[in-house]
Image (cartoon, rainbow, N blue to C red; front, side, top):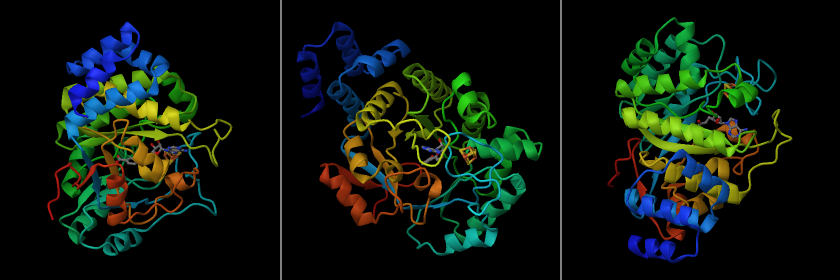
Length: 372
Ligand code: V47
Ligand code: SF4
């Protein structure tokens, strides 16, 4: 079915006028309003949402689905913060770890030459400063001049820059000279102040998170954005979050991808909250794809949602399945993610994508196709 056929199908459906108007806007490449986004979250039929999200995804990426050969380093889980949803952090206990620089370099050395990206993020260690990470990045750059270094969430950066009394611009310029190529999307959680106060009061504020990403973009450092959903937030808070991201992207164009992160409830203070259903997850992907019309990519992070759900998300606006994640990532496995030892071979990734009749495309960190 090509795009016009999908549009005809939507217009032929017996749906309320307000939904027809939204479909018309999307067919005409017009942006939807926050009120329309809220209506979609609250009232829209899942099949209809999937169709609209797919119009936008196809327009941007055709049948391509992206993946990357990458690996993760989680330097430590010793954290100054106590986010209530976090299953990962410990303040010096039998379950805490602090990798040395040499141990992290060993992870880099153990990767084969096809790895294109290293993703470095972890907890906010009280004793490590920006120069510690700057030197780590320099050493990684020396070992692997070709690799893309995506490192340090805005929450980690905020702490490091405050500790070293540097402005956002000074801190980011310094890290860029050390080898920083881009910033991961972590720490965004939910921008609404009251909800943020309840789930992660001590970490960087929403305005600090947004300001760090804006400064990074202005310095030519691209980044990703996330949203933690399915805890105590309401649809209104999700739309507010998406709106702030859309506004920032209008100003800078520096975001590569949006990554919705489903709250996982094991081993944390919010364990009493039931996790979002698969229907809710798909609804969230679709509305995100529709609302964030200026984001080039929507990522379904398979280590968290599991491989079958990642395949399903490809019919709700997702075009990127992240990477092969060689080496362990513990931030989700400790919170009860679907994948306890996340690792996937390239041929498995290709098969996952082909099973849903899409075209697997290996990318680099800036979404340029890798031609073998
Ligand atoms: O900010 C913590 C989330 C994030 C839980 O940029 C949880 O490519 C669910 O940002 N349930 C860090 N989520 C990871 C992150 C990320 C992941 C993948 C790709 C990229 C990218 C970035 O993990 C934190 C927080 O929102 N998180 N605990 C939990 N219990
Ligand atoms: Fe620390 Fe990050 Fe966990 Fe918050 S989510 S407690 S900042 S590791």
